[in-house]
Length: 177
Image 1 (cartoon, rainbow, N blue to C red):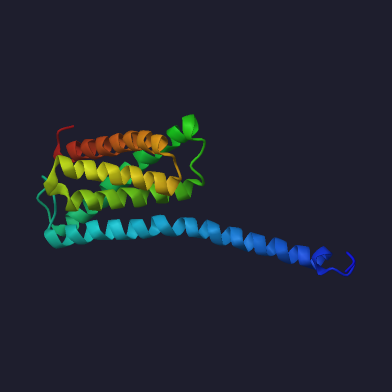
Image 2: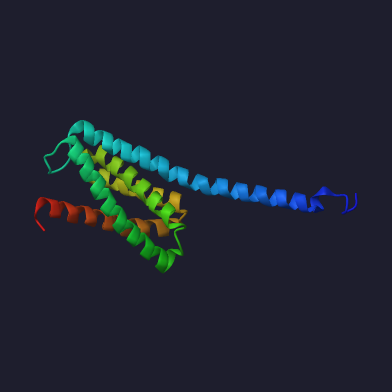
């Protein structure tokens, strides 16, 4: 078959192939949003369900709804601080975290899942914290596609920022600061 008769050399075939490639790229990009969204829904839903059913956790004596609203406030502030740390780490040595919205969604999903792990393993004290950190490093490596050394360093940075923001907010709400 000569190139003139071969359909692979026609303009229509090239347009169709290009469109198929674009569609495949868009599907792959949409799939990147599914994993952190599921993590956010599962982790956040687990924490919210626990807080609403148990009537709260921690030093604040409040209703379940008050505890749930406080959790939303705390995780929002932790997420802002964590994204700032993630952005700084990306600018310094990681080389980018992808689209900002996807990075925020990934970090929110990771925070929600680690909060759920911390809530259910809270009775184990130090061992529970180690399990939470290992899960945190693994989720960072998985969602951000990092090698182990980068994920450990990023986990330490964002975890310290997350815990620091939580303690600062708790101190402000308790009237200490």
